[in-house]
Amino acid sequence: MSAKIIDGKGLANTIKDEIREEVERIKERGGKIPHLAAVLVGENPASQSYVRNKVRSCEQCGFQSTLIRKPAIITQPQLLAVIDELNKDEEIDGFIVQLPLPDHIDEELVTLAIDPKKDVDGFHPVNFGRMALGLPSYLPATPNGILEMLKRYNIETSGKHCVVVGRSNIVGKPMSILLAGKGYPGNCTVTLTHSRTKDLKAETLRADIIIMALGKANFLTADMVKEGAVVIDVGINRVDDVTAKRGYRLKGDVDYDAVAAKASYITPVPGGVGPMTVASLLMNTLRASKKEVYG
Ligand code: GUN
Image (cartoon, rainbow, N blue to C red; front, side):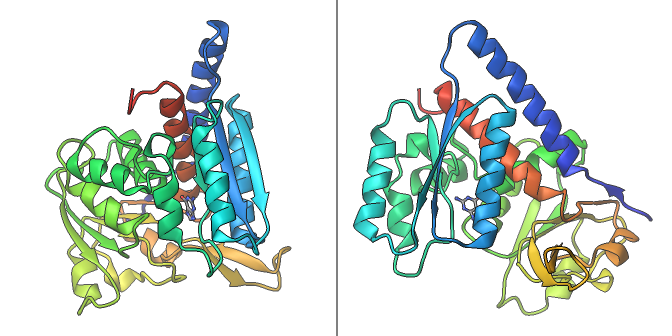
Protein backbone atom coordinates (compact mmCIF):
# COMPACT_ATOMS: atom_id res chain seq x y z
CA MET A 1 0.00 0.00 0.00
CA SER A 2 1.11 3.56 -0.59
CA ALA A 3 -0.26 6.05 1.88
CA LYS A 4 -2.51 8.99 1.14
CA ILE A 5 -0.83 12.10 2.51
CA ILE A 6 -2.91 14.09 4.99
CA ASP A 7 -2.28 17.68 3.95
CA GLY A 8 -2.33 19.47 7.31
CA LYS A 9 -1.10 22.71 5.82
CA GLY A 10 -3.85 22.78 3.19
CA LEU A 11 -6.48 21.81 5.74
CA ALA A 12 -5.28 24.48 8.16
CA ASN A 13 -5.55 27.07 5.37
CA THR A 14 -9.12 25.93 4.64
CA ILE A 15 -9.99 26.30 8.34
CA LYS A 16 -8.32 29.72 8.49
CA ASP A 17 -10.35 30.81 5.44
CA GLU A 18 -13.55 29.66 7.18
CA ILE A 19 -12.57 31.55 10.33
CA ARG A 20 -11.70 34.70 8.34
CA GLU A 21 -15.13 34.63 6.67
CA GLU A 22 -16.79 34.35 10.04
CA VAL A 23 -14.69 37.23 11.42
CA GLU A 24 -15.78 39.34 8.44
CA ARG A 25 -19.41 38.63 9.25
CA ILE A 26 -18.78 39.54 12.90
CA LYS A 27 -17.16 42.81 11.79
CA GLU A 28 -20.10 43.64 9.52
CA ARG A 29 -22.54 43.39 12.36
CA GLY A 30 -20.25 45.36 14.70
CA GLY A 31 -19.40 42.42 16.96
CA LYS A 32 -16.24 41.77 18.97
CA ILE A 33 -13.16 40.96 16.87
CA PRO A 34 -11.40 37.94 18.42
CA HIS A 35 -8.20 38.96 20.22
CA LEU A 36 -5.46 36.48 21.16
CA ALA A 37 -2.47 37.34 23.31
CA ALA A 38 0.71 35.25 23.48
CA VAL A 39 3.33 35.46 26.20
CA LEU A 40 6.84 34.45 25.11
CA VAL A 41 9.53 34.17 27.78
CA GLY A 42 13.19 34.01 26.75
CA GLU A 43 14.80 33.27 23.42
CA ASN A 44 14.10 29.57 22.75
CA PRO A 45 14.36 29.44 18.93
CA ALA A 46 11.60 26.86 18.43
CA SER A 47 9.25 28.77 20.76
CA GLN A 48 9.96 32.03 18.92
CA SER A 49 9.13 30.38 15.63
CA TYR A 50 5.88 28.83 16.98
CA VAL A 51 4.72 32.11 18.46
CA ARG A 52 5.58 34.04 15.28
CA ASN A 53 3.44 31.56 13.40
CA LYS A 54 0.53 31.97 15.80
CA VAL A 55 0.64 35.77 15.51
CA ARG A 56 0.89 35.62 11.71
CA SER A 57 -2.07 33.23 11.59
CA CYS A 58 -4.14 35.65 13.69
CA GLU A 59 -3.47 38.35 11.09
CA GLN A 60 -4.52 35.99 8.27
CA CYS A 61 -7.87 35.46 10.01
CA GLY A 62 -8.54 39.11 10.80
CA PHE A 63 -8.01 38.56 14.54
CA GLN A 64 -6.30 41.06 16.76
CA SER A 65 -3.16 39.76 18.42
CA THR A 66 -0.81 40.94 21.12
CA LEU A 67 2.65 39.51 21.63
CA ILE A 68 4.14 40.01 25.09
CA ARG A 69 7.86 39.26 25.18
CA LYS A 70 9.66 38.91 28.49
CA PRO A 71 13.32 38.15 29.20
CA ALA A 72 14.32 34.70 30.49
CA ILE A 73 15.31 36.31 33.80
CA ILE A 74 11.71 37.33 34.59
CA THR A 75 10.78 36.24 38.10
CA GLN A 76 7.83 33.99 38.80
CA PRO A 77 5.86 36.75 40.61
CA GLN A 78 6.47 39.09 37.66
CA LEU A 79 5.18 36.50 35.19
CA LEU A 80 2.15 35.79 37.39
CA ALA A 81 1.45 39.53 37.40
CA VAL A 82 1.45 39.55 33.56
CA ILE A 83 -1.05 36.67 33.60
CA ASP A 84 -3.22 38.45 36.14
CA GLU A 85 -3.41 41.50 33.89
CA LEU A 86 -4.38 39.38 30.89
CA ASN A 87 -7.04 37.61 32.97
CA LYS A 88 -8.57 41.00 33.80
CA ASP A 89 -8.19 42.64 30.39
CA GLU A 90 -11.66 42.57 28.83
CA GLU A 91 -10.23 43.27 25.40
CA ILE A 92 -8.33 39.94 25.38
CA ASP A 93 -10.55 36.91 24.63
CA GLY A 94 -7.89 34.28 25.15
CA PHE A 95 -4.17 33.96 25.73
CA ILE A 96 -1.37 31.44 25.83
CA VAL A 97 1.93 31.24 27.65
CA GLN A 98 4.32 29.47 25.29
CA LEU A 99 6.02 26.44 26.84
CA PRO A 100 8.65 25.44 27.83
CA LEU A 101 9.41 28.11 30.43
CA PRO A 102 12.87 28.70 32.01
CA ASP A 103 13.78 26.21 34.76
CA HIS A 104 13.28 28.67 37.63
CA ILE A 105 9.60 29.06 36.72
CA ASP A 106 7.01 26.50 37.79
CA GLU A 107 4.95 25.71 34.69
CA GLU A 108 2.19 24.16 36.75
CA LEU A 109 1.73 27.33 38.82
CA VAL A 110 1.68 29.43 35.67
CA THR A 111 -0.93 27.19 34.03
CA LEU A 112 -3.06 27.30 37.18
CA ALA A 113 -2.93 31.11 37.18
CA ILE A 114 -4.62 31.37 33.76
CA ASP A 115 -8.37 32.01 33.95
CA PRO A 116 -9.93 28.82 32.48
CA LYS A 117 -12.30 31.04 30.45
CA LYS A 118 -9.28 32.48 28.62
CA ASP A 119 -7.21 29.29 28.51
CA VAL A 120 -7.42 28.73 24.75
CA ASP A 121 -4.57 26.18 24.96
CA GLY A 122 -6.85 24.01 27.10
CA PHE A 123 -4.01 23.31 29.59
CA HIS A 124 -5.71 24.43 32.83
CA PRO A 125 -6.90 21.52 35.01
CA VAL A 126 -10.47 22.82 34.74
CA ASN A 127 -10.37 22.55 30.94
CA PHE A 128 -8.50 19.25 31.06
CA GLY A 129 -11.05 17.86 33.52
CA ARG A 130 -14.00 19.09 31.47
CA MET A 131 -12.44 17.56 28.36
CA ALA A 132 -11.97 14.23 30.17
CA LEU A 133 -15.61 14.29 31.30
CA GLY A 134 -16.86 15.14 27.81
CA LEU A 135 -18.14 18.57 28.92
CA PRO A 136 -17.76 21.72 26.77
CA SER A 137 -14.17 22.96 27.10
CA TYR A 138 -11.26 24.37 25.16
CA LEU A 139 -9.64 21.28 23.70
CA PRO A 140 -5.83 21.21 23.69
CA ALA A 141 -4.69 22.42 20.29
CA THR A 142 -2.63 19.49 19.01
CA PRO A 143 -5.07 16.67 19.89
CA ASN A 144 -7.94 18.78 18.57
CA GLY A 145 -6.04 19.42 15.33
CA ILE A 146 -5.57 15.67 14.93
CA LEU A 147 -9.29 14.99 15.51
CA GLU A 148 -10.08 17.62 12.88
CA MET A 149 -7.74 15.89 10.39
CA LEU A 150 -9.36 12.50 10.98
CA LYS A 151 -12.80 14.09 10.57
CA ARG A 152 -12.08 16.03 7.42
CA TYR A 153 -10.46 13.00 5.77
CA ASN A 154 -13.43 10.82 6.81
CA ILE A 155 -11.14 8.33 8.52
CA GLU A 156 -13.12 5.68 10.39
CA THR A 157 -12.26 5.53 14.11
CA SER A 158 -15.11 3.56 15.71
CA GLY A 159 -13.89 0.26 17.15
CA LYS A 160 -10.36 0.86 15.83
CA HIS A 161 -7.34 0.08 17.94
CA CYS A 162 -5.38 3.26 18.48
CA VAL A 163 -1.88 3.31 19.96
CA VAL A 164 -0.64 6.63 21.31
CA VAL A 165 3.12 6.83 21.81
CA GLY A 166 4.07 9.43 24.45
CA ARG A 167 2.14 10.47 27.56
CA SER A 168 2.70 14.24 27.72
CA ASN A 169 0.02 16.37 29.34
CA ILE A 170 -0.42 18.43 26.19
CA VAL A 171 -0.55 15.69 23.54
CA GLY A 172 -0.41 11.99 24.46
CA LYS A 173 -2.59 11.99 27.57
CA PRO A 174 -5.43 14.16 26.22
CA MET A 175 -5.25 12.46 22.80
CA SER A 176 -5.81 9.05 24.41
CA ILE A 177 -8.83 10.36 26.33
CA LEU A 178 -10.39 12.06 23.31
CA LEU A 179 -9.99 9.05 21.01
CA ALA A 180 -11.52 6.76 23.63
CA GLY A 181 -14.45 9.16 24.07
CA LYS A 182 -17.92 8.76 22.64
CA GLY A 183 -18.80 9.95 19.14
CA TYR A 184 -16.81 10.67 16.02
CA PRO A 185 -13.86 10.92 15.86
CA GLY A 186 -13.60 8.62 18.85
CA ASN A 187 -14.97 5.27 20.04
CA CYS A 188 -11.45 3.85 19.67
CA THR A 189 -9.89 1.21 21.87
CA VAL A 190 -6.82 3.08 23.05
CA THR A 191 -3.42 1.95 24.31
CA LEU A 192 -1.30 4.74 25.80
CA THR A 193 2.37 3.80 25.62
CA HIS A 194 5.48 5.47 27.08
CA SER A 195 9.12 4.95 28.00
CA ARG A 196 8.32 2.07 30.39
CA THR A 197 6.20 0.13 27.91
CA LYS A 198 7.70 -3.36 27.72
CA ASP A 199 7.35 -4.25 24.04
CA LEU A 200 6.42 -1.15 22.09
CA LYS A 201 6.74 -2.84 18.71
CA ALA A 202 4.19 -5.49 19.70
CA GLU A 203 1.79 -2.65 20.61
CA THR A 204 2.28 -0.52 17.49
CA LEU A 205 2.00 -3.60 15.25
CA ARG A 206 -1.55 -4.13 16.54
CA ALA A 207 -2.58 -0.54 15.85
CA ASP A 208 -5.06 0.61 13.23
CA ILE A 209 -4.16 4.20 14.14
CA ILE A 210 -0.77 5.28 15.54
CA ILE A 211 -0.22 8.70 17.12
CA MET A 212 3.50 9.41 17.50
CA ALA A 213 4.17 12.08 20.12
CA LEU A 214 7.54 11.16 21.51
CA GLY A 215 10.00 13.76 20.21
CA LYS A 216 12.56 11.32 18.76
CA ALA A 217 13.42 11.67 15.08
CA ASN A 218 12.60 8.68 12.83
CA PHE A 219 11.69 6.52 15.85
CA LEU A 220 8.75 4.68 14.27
CA THR A 221 10.17 2.37 11.61
CA ALA A 222 8.28 0.36 8.99
CA ASP A 223 8.75 -2.95 10.84
CA MET A 224 6.67 -1.47 13.71
CA VAL A 225 3.65 -0.68 11.51
CA LYS A 226 0.79 -2.86 10.31
CA GLU A 227 -0.09 -2.73 6.61
CA GLY A 228 -2.85 -0.13 6.10
CA ALA A 229 -2.42 1.68 9.43
CA VAL A 230 -3.17 5.40 9.79
CA VAL A 231 -0.01 7.16 11.02
CA ILE A 232 -0.15 10.60 12.64
CA ASP A 233 3.23 12.21 13.37
CA VAL A 234 3.31 14.90 16.06
CA GLY A 235 7.12 15.05 16.29
CA ILE A 236 8.94 18.22 15.25
CA ASN A 237 12.62 17.40 15.70
CA ARG A 238 15.46 19.63 14.59
CA VAL A 239 18.11 17.42 13.00
CA ASP A 240 21.52 18.91 12.06
CA ASP A 241 21.99 19.20 8.32
CA VAL A 242 24.87 21.23 6.92
CA THR A 243 23.25 21.30 3.47
CA ALA A 244 20.15 23.07 4.83
CA LYS A 245 20.03 26.88 4.84
CA ARG A 246 19.37 27.07 8.59
CA GLY A 247 21.81 24.28 9.44
CA TYR A 248 19.01 21.92 10.47
CA ARG A 249 16.05 20.10 9.00
CA LEU A 250 12.69 19.29 10.63
CA LYS A 251 12.04 15.59 11.06
CA GLY A 252 9.06 13.84 12.56
CA ASP A 253 9.01 10.85 14.91
CA VAL A 254 8.23 8.63 11.91
CA ASP A 255 10.69 7.18 9.40
CA TYR A 256 8.50 8.75 6.74
CA ASP A 257 9.35 7.15 3.38
CA ALA A 258 9.46 3.56 4.62
CA VAL A 259 6.33 3.91 6.77
CA ALA A 260 4.43 5.73 3.98
CA ALA A 261 4.93 2.64 1.79
CA LYS A 262 2.91 0.59 4.31
CA ALA A 263 0.38 3.01 5.79
CA SER A 264 -3.06 3.93 4.40
CA TYR A 265 -2.77 7.56 5.57
CA ILE A 266 0.20 9.50 6.88
CA THR A 267 0.93 13.06 7.99
CA PRO A 268 4.14 14.71 6.76
CA VAL A 269 6.57 16.83 8.81
CA PRO A 270 6.55 19.72 8.20
CA GLY A 271 3.08 20.45 6.85
CA GLY A 272 1.08 17.91 8.87
CA VAL A 273 0.04 18.23 12.49
CA GLY A 274 1.95 21.52 13.13
CA PRO A 275 -0.28 23.82 11.05
CA MET A 276 -3.39 22.09 12.44
CA THR A 277 -2.27 22.92 15.98
CA VAL A 278 -2.26 26.61 15.08
CA ALA A 279 -5.66 26.30 13.34
CA SER A 280 -7.09 24.71 16.52
CA LEU A 281 -5.81 27.57 18.65
CA LEU A 282 -7.59 30.00 16.32
CA MET A 283 -10.80 27.95 16.56
CA ASN A 284 -10.58 28.08 20.36
CA THR A 285 -9.98 31.84 20.30
CA LEU A 286 -13.01 32.37 18.08
CA ARG A 287 -15.08 30.29 20.51
CA ALA A 288 -13.71 32.35 23.41
CA SER A 289 -14.71 35.63 21.73
CA LYS A 290 -18.23 34.24 21.18
CA LYS A 291 -18.31 33.01 24.80
CA GLU A 292 -19.33 29.61 23.49
CA VAL A 293 -17.80 27.47 26.21
CA TYR A 294 -18.39 29.35 29.45
CA GLY A 295 -21.17 31.79 28.50
N1 GUN B 1 4.76 24.30 23.53
C1 GUN B 1 4.61 23.28 22.65
N2 GUN B 1 3.36 23.21 22.21
C2 GUN B 1 2.67 24.20 22.83
C3 GUN B 1 1.32 24.64 22.76
O1 GUN B 1 0.46 24.09 22.08
N3 GUN B 1 1.02 25.72 23.54
C4 GUN B 1 1.93 26.34 24.32
N4 GUN B 1 1.53 27.37 25.05
N5 GUN B 1 3.19 25.95 24.40
C5 GUN B 1 3.56 24.89 23.65
